[in-house]
Image (cartoon, rainbow, N blue to C red; front, top):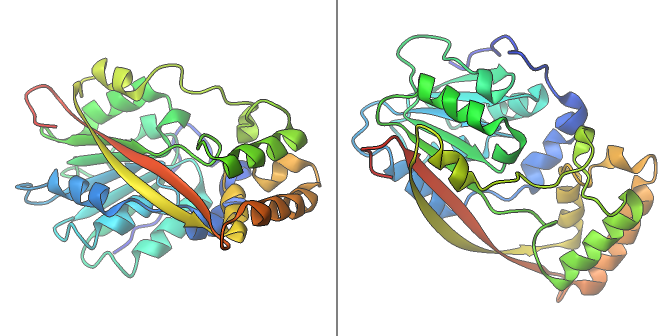
Length: 283
């Protein structure tokens, strides 16, 4: 069965950041490339009863992709500061999970502890969210809770803010004309990047054996879908615009339609997966 939320950890649910946009997040955020999904599943080869711990799951993209491929998955823990996201993820997993149990934990990733013995994660994933976390503390937590041969997978592919194309450049300029030159970061002011690479974070952690896997992806965006995606981001979510969001979306739609070729805006990106194990493992 799918179990109810565990009590919140030291951080309360951050509904102010993405709570109202959970439905848009599920609809407009790109999923994982098939190659990345099969890579994650392959890390569990020979594991009799895989357990997944997904940190910052959003609306559950990682377990939704894994369940049809990794049929032996017996338990999933989802940890997020946003209760609305967890509720959406749990609902999305219900028709897919079969006999796999699911727990949701509202709280900060680094404070997670398994709710019951025998649930040491064999795969710990974090997709497009590691930069928001207390990264060294998260990796210390992973070392405390993970099975001896567990794999940590840190994944991501940037965003339309960082993607370099003519249409994303003019879109970024439009956002800056409303919100200022610095990239906004939701309720936390501005965002300047993680300061050091995730590879360095992993190298200084117990999971220091790291292999990098890169998956080129090509996406075709409709202008309206880009607007939906922007509503889910920390740099262009509606609450940042102080009542001017309808005006911004009208201007953005006009701009995107102008730059679309045959109604399509092309994004060529690379989805990167860092697989990390404790020394002696095989990443």
